[in-house]
Structures are given as structure tokens and as C-alpha cells.
Length: 253
Length: 251
Figure 1 (cartoon, helix red, strand yellow):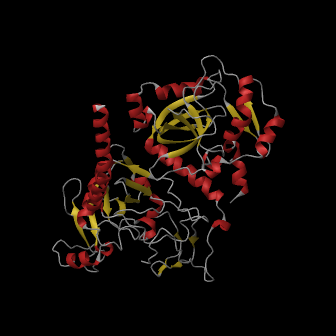
Figure 2: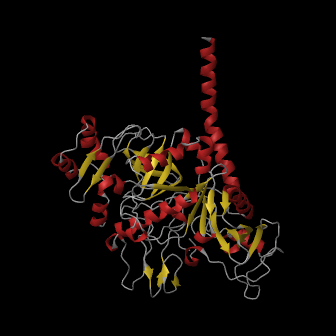
Figure 3: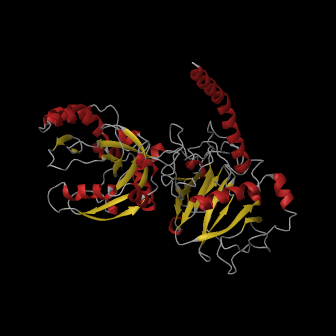
């Protein structure tokens, strides 16, 4: 009876403590990778007739124990941190419900004119089937340096969120580097793009001595480097590399 | 949805229903199925599992439809297009697979890429489910074969909840369960009784992810038609799509 009472008390204590522990876990993930956020939008082709957002067929969900593998031949990739703090990685692929616009088209999400030949591809939301996510971005391959670079470019889960900070990108990059095996490549720098940052952080970083541009004359793609390349170098490639191929036809997905 | 795509994939898709309704009792008697009985079963399938099951889950696992449960001596083949037939073969001694054999929903091994036009096959380690069941698992790699009429690549999947589920890839499988992949290879290279099929070295998880993704895309390219797409406006541009789970903001 005494044992039973102890067991009952232990079970009761565990029952009371578990929700608190779960909340503490969620709070920790919120701090590390940003709060869970619904996607900013779903494009017209990303959900089927029943409203189901199709999952990218090349999805890899990586943890420190179960790694994903990235191959330059399949780059570029998109990444998202999910509710449980797992890393979801997808590669670019034409969406079966999307189209290729031979004459270009007007994209309603950002009211921009897209160039001829643009294809509608799987975007970030296809990594989570449209579910809420944390910070996200791209993993691009740089041919000149044979490195993969990481950034925070996502119009769905990064932009429009007030808590997507450089520190969170650095945390996510650490998780990515710990959970991914690279094929014939190393890690390059991690770029925090101001265009996808919260307004307050953007204003602050515009005054930072760390602020850099892809092209300083044109002031294109303002960013700061939040983690150096795998070899420890902060500097960008010495050889002026061609602009890395952005995911999703340069689409802020 | 493209009816041809559905029909062309109905062979294995209907396997669960067929086996449950027809093939298992037939196998118990170890006599060939009667075509008329099979026709009746095929005419009213409860559900086309290979069409109505999602291939991938958000946790990165794959869903597969069990066609031959582990330990069953007979291999059930579902053949024909409009007419479906199930055949139960009596296996030779020692040819009872220790793994389950499965098909991957929403996949096509495209003929123009050297495939047979059917769904991708998988061997499932650690699955205890019966035929027709949908099992969740982690893709570890691919077994590669050549010769005869067999599909030449079969995914290796570790069933969720089984000891194999802790394996990361082929190398990890070989380390934790020595000989398990080789046993499956040997089964396929020997079960027909002749050296008609030969095995190459298994390919690892990255190759399997690509193989699976390509097969899903090849299926979906024919499965979805223009009629499934949301219409464009009069100028040929897409429209905003309000989705209940999104904030529905612009850029």
C-alpha cells in the first residue's frame, strides 16, 4: 500500500510537472529559433483542390542523430525549423500543380513582374505541409569556393516576424551544420539578410560596422555575416563569384 | 485527376484489398485464384491505397503499402490493367522472406527513365502488419538488381517502432544487423531458382531520397492535370489564394 501511494504520488507529480516541462521545452525552442508562426501566405498552386499543401517529395528531416545529406548537384535547398526544433530541408523542384510562364507573369503576393520562363516550384511551406514554423531560409551552393552558404531568406516563415534575429539564424546554422552531411563541399559563411529581418533589427544593423553588400556600389543584398565559413574565414570568396543561384527562381518563398 | 494514372497504378494499389479479400484464402489452399473471383474483388475496391495514401510525412518518414507480409511464403502478383488477377505461387523450400514486400504510394518508375511504369517497390524491415496495411518507415537505402523481369531497384525501409528504425542508413544497418540487407539481396537473386537476377552493391540513403523523390514527381506529373490547377485570371496571371492556416499577407 505504501509503495502504491508512493507510485501514485510520483505519477501525480509527473502529471503535474510534464506540461510545465513541455512548456519549458517550447520556450527554449522559441528562444533558439524564434516563435512558431503561421506561413505568411500559401501560393495558389501549393495546395490541391481540397486545400492540402503538398509536401516536397525530396523532404529530409534532420536531427543531430539522423543526418540529412546535401549534394551540390541538387542545390539550391530551402530549410525550416519546425515546431519540435527539427530541421526540414527540401530541394528545388517544379510543383505538379504549378505552371511555367513562357511570357512571365504578375505575382500577386509581392505585386512583382516575373521574368519569362519562370516556373512555380515547391516553396518553404512544402517542407511543413503549411504548418507553423520557426526561422527559415536557403542553403545555396557557391561553385567558386565549393561551399554551401546559409541565409534567412524566406518570405513565409522569416519575413513579417518580429523575433527572427541574427542570433536565431546563428543557432539554426549551428543545428544545420551539426545535422547535415555535405557531399564534396564545406560550409561557407552564414548570411543574415536585412531584407528579411524585422524592421527594428534592420534599422539597427544598417548602422553596424558589420554591414556588407554583395555589390557595395549598388548596395545590393545588404547583410551581416553571423558565422564564418567552416575554415574560420569571415571573408567572402576572394574570387568574385557569380551570384549564387537563389532558390525558387529568386522567389522569396 | 488523370484516370489513366489511376488505372496504371491500380495493380499494386489494389493489392491490399485483393489480398485481404481473395489472395490470402487462396494462398491458404495453395491453389491458383479463380479469375472470376478476382474480377469481383477488383471491381469494387474499398480504397486505392496507392493513390489515396500520401507518400511522405512531415517528419520525413515514408508511407508504404504492404503487399507481401514477412514470413508469408507466397508472392502475390496483381497483374493486368482493366482485368486484375491474383496469383499465389508455392515457394521453394527456404524461400520465405524475412522482410515484408511493399509498394510506395504516389510513385511511378517512369519507362522513359528505365522503369517499368509501376509503383516503386520497397522491402520493409521489422514490419508485422498484414497485406494491405499502410506502414510508416524510414528510408535507409536501395537494393539494386539486374536481369529478369524484376524491377531493378527496391527501397529498403525500416518500419517505425521496430529495432531497425534506429538505423540511419545502409552502413548503420549492416553494423547493427549484420547480414540483414544481404539476406534480402539473396532472396531476390535466388527465389526464382535460376541465376536470372544479379545484385549490385546497395546504394545509400541519399540515392534513395533522390530515387523516391523522382518517382513521386513522375507520378504526380501525370496524376494532376490542368483541371486540378487553379485557373488564371483573364490576363493569364495567378490570383491570391487565401488559405485558412496562413496569415494571408502579401510580400
